[in-house]
Structures are given as C-alpha cells and as structure tokens.
Image (cartoon, rainbow, N blue to C red; front, side, top):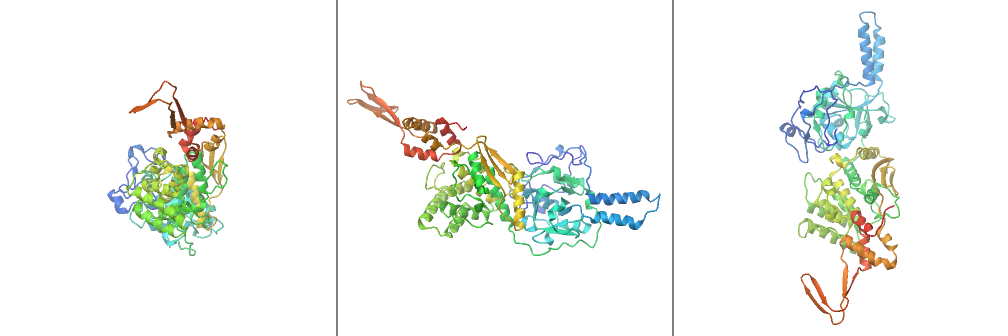
Length: 595
C-alpha cells in the first residue's frame, strides 16, 4: 500500500491494460470491523457513515504476474501425486505406499490457517488483530460464529464445506486464508482439525492467501485510509482452496471463553495511539510516555501523578490518588469510552454523563465545587454562550476540563492535533491529554494510518492478545530517555518516536541571573512575549503635562526620565506556565541555549 493509503497493484498478477472488474459497487474506505458496508449499501454505491472511500484508478493497475506459493504440506502432496502420474506408464506403483506418503505429507501440519471472507479481512487489517466474533461491528458470517469467544485455526487447508460456510452471507466477498506459524498455538496438540486461541496478532501472519487473481484484484483495488500497507503478505494460492467436499470439519468452542470487552480494548488502543501521535516535542513525548506507563523522568520534567497507565487501562486496579483533575479525567475517559461520535454527537449529553460520574467519587465539597465550576465554563463555551479564547495561566483551571473542551469542539483526532497552539493556548500536558480523550472516543481500528504507526499498532495488538489470555495487562518496557542529543520513547525495546531535547526550565534559568540584571531580563522577555511592561515617567516640578491621541507631552526645561519595570512575582508565574514554542521564545529572550 502506498503512503496515501492506497494499495499498489503491481506484482499481483494483473495483465497489462486489463481493467479491474469489481465484483460489486463501491465499498467504504474505512475497512474496519465497525464500519464495513452492508451488502445493500455496497451494491448501490452508497457510502456509509464515517466512510471515506478512495478507489484506486484502474489505469494505475500494473502488469506483473506472481507465481502462487503453496504451503509445504500442499506442495509435498502435489509432488507425490505428480510423481505417481509420471511413473504410471513406465512402472508399477505400490498404491498403499504412495497413499501413505501422501497422507503423511497432508496430515503433518506445517502452518495454521484462519479462514474468513474478504469483508471480514478488512476488519482484521484495520485493527491488525484476529479476534473473536465479538470484536467485529459489521460482520459477515464465518467460522467465528461457531465458537464464540475463540479464534479457530485450522491445522490443514479447509475443505469445500468450510469455504462455503464463510461465503454463505451475501456480500461477504471471496474466501481468504490468513496463514500463521505453528507457534501461535502455544503448547496445544496439533493432531486435531483445529486449535483455538483467544486472539492472535496480525504481525504473526506469514501470508494472506486469495483463491484467484480476480479476488486479489478486488481487494487491492480499494484504498482504505485506516489500513496499513500489507502488500508483502498478499498471495494467490489456489491449492489452499482446492479441498474436496467432506463430512465437514467440526468447529466447536472448546469451552466457555473468558469475557472480553473488545470494544473497550480498541478504545484503549486508540487512547494509547493518540497520546503518541500528539507528541510533537520532547516535553509532549514525556507526557505521552507517562500515560503509557513510564516512571523515570529527568528532574526537569514535572507531571501530575494521575497521568499514568492506570488511567488508560481500565482493566487495571484504580489508583488511590484522588483529586479534582484526577476525578475529572476519569469521568471524562469513562463517558467518552461509551460514545461513538460517528453515530451520535451531543456535547451536552457527554457533559451530563461526566457530571453524573464525578458525583460517584465522593469528593469533598470544596474540590467538587472546583470541578463543577470548570465544567460549567466548558458547557457555556460549547453552547456558544461565551466566546472561546486561548487558555491563559490560571491555577483554578483544570487540565482535564480544558482537554475535554478541546475534544468537544474538535472530536476528530487529526483536526484536534492540527489546531495551532497559538489559537488554543494549550500547554503540553493539556494537548496530550486532549488527544488521549479523542483517541478514547474513536478507538484505534477506524483511525487513519497517517496518525498511526505499524510498530505501535502491533505492540498494542500484542498487549490485547495478552489481555485475552488473562496475562499481565501493562504495556511492557515503556522507557523515556532524554539527553543533550534528544528524547525518545521506547516500548518493549522498540523506539516509537524521537524528538528534540527537553528545553531548560525557564524559571530556574531566570533565577540564575544576577539580581542586578533581573529587571532588564524581565523587560526583555516581556517584550518578546508581548506581555505588558510598566513605564513610569518622572515629571519635574513645574512641568506642564498634556496629552493627545498620540501620547503624553511633558513641557519642562529639566530632563525627563522614563523608567520601565516588570513586577517579579506575576512575571515568574507566567514564565512557569510556558510550554512549547512560547517557552522557546522566552528562553531565547533570556539568551538561553540548550546544550
């Protein structure tokens, strides 16, 4: 798939000059398990809600042919059959021996196969996760229906009865097989028709097989904004779909599966992804790292204690540190996790849910009043009762309330992150927290890939598989590093993002300036930042003072002095509240250079 989210067709066995002939009309571009088109909509060309269809131009179709690749078991069986045929006219063949060799070749599993249809494949690609039926929104019947809570992986290529089962529903598209290594079965015995797992990450896949070139063209002809490039997995392998009809492989759930809320899993993954996507500077990357679970930071990084993995992963035990910002964020995160902006969007309804949620935490009256005052301000801006103005330094303003306001005004993550800081006044913590809330609202599988990375998607998919297995639910090995060369965020040894070095503490640098020079430094910074500077004119005795529209006129034979000054305490408060580009400008005015 190209950088613009469209699948390249070169190398997929398409004849030069031959147009792509779709099986049906257009499909939605959001190939996710909550947004696949209904058959009727697909047939009519209708674009369903939140779809952003990008069909690849037929003229862009390449002209190359790929040799179908067969799994080892199928190749071995074919070799035996071919050898037997070649020898028939020349020498007698021991029929029983040949049958035994063929049987051994077919019966010894060399891979595991997830059989589904092309429409369900879109959901797998968007989430990069093969999960049970419950993980899909729009769903077309396949083998998942037969084993709720489980993913069946066949130990042999499917027979015709199973293939027919995944094509039974109108609009399902062609059959598809995702091939996995035997290792995904863990310690389960493989001398059975199928093994069952709670989930498996797409990163484990060996290949995605189609029965015919036409089926692959139909898949490749559609560009989806929420599907990462995956050309390297695509293959045409007719032999895998050549099984004869039989009594049918029994697909039955081995036992009752653990209860997993797969929508919640996707919403948590969306919040994690959004935190990293929002990190445009070293300071913002530190905030994202804290949300993901990092605990070690340089002394210059000061973050609220409630910004942690415990707040994103609501599978975890709750944190006992309760304050107004903490409670506000929890209530907002919960409320947005139950909403879908694509289906219905009501900022006032969300605020009502947040209000109700906050009441359940038993905050003392004074802290409850603080949260209530902030939310009333948010509601008045959302309802256009007062104008929205860039945030200013205000000790009474809660990060959670400011973040929610930004999301209620721009719920789309891409639009939220594109909002200039000069227009919002949001500091680093507010920007990343707002992104987390927006990611929680939309989830991961529907998010456009220009706001995602394959590396992070696969790490969170692996986390989801661990959750499904009932194992530790924290992201593993989250590490934030900072030095003079830059900052970096790693998860499980994988570097996700690298940003510029952390900026110095502007207040600490100001404090190092000699007392006699601080007034001049304050004036210089204020003029660079556009903050007011007080000018006092000393008027000599007997001077005549008049004024007009252009200024004040002092008439006197004596010398007139003008003294500029900035009161230190409010200046330091303003300096401490700076972040991002604003702090850079202040540091530059202080002649501070990052080493």
